[in-house]
Length: 288
Image (cartoon, rainbow, N blue to C red; front, side):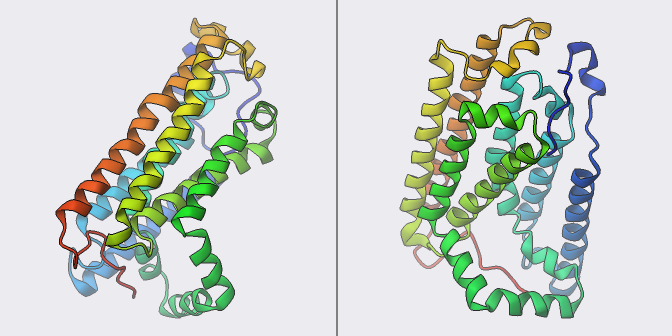
């Protein structure tokens, strides 16, 4: 999540431009280790498919790999040269990695991976009024929707966005807010307290997210003014102008990202219409 290198990436260097920032690599390895070991402990105790179903474990694996692709692969450094690559990285975090990680329900395996007294301490802390009240508030679908929307629009303000490319602190905050708000948003819609009767509201939240992100993408696509002049020096090596790069970035946000929210909305609506009133595909977590 550190700021991009000062020298924009050139085409002949792309396949060797992997990023191995220790903080990112360690966090990825630790999270993967905790999930795998916790899942083994859970399935060894309760049997395979209990607590965490196999498709949920596969979803977490897909989300983890998506995070690695966004933060370690050459896409990360390419974002310092091309706005369109930076946009693709952000969408990979928000519309691919975040929902897959949420579907994998990682808190359950994480708890099973640590000693019993740690689990009890975590349970006691989570039950305290300040923690419980804060969590209930930030995972209200309306609040999670607003936080996610604010993160997307605020960070795309030209002055702030350009500042992230020259400041490690701001760039880290940008990625944390994108991924963190996306995790809250998807968790509130998929695992929140809404239940079956509120599933149509979740569909509306997804649809409106598709609308406002598509609007931002369209503004970038059709603008005749360059929003981020900092990319002036990085695009020519790739055979495109800065404005064409901006238009491509807008299309990335507008079409594939917007469609991802719409597809998720349709899938959620389909499960709501298909399942009986007394059953939900999102089963309660099995706590250790």
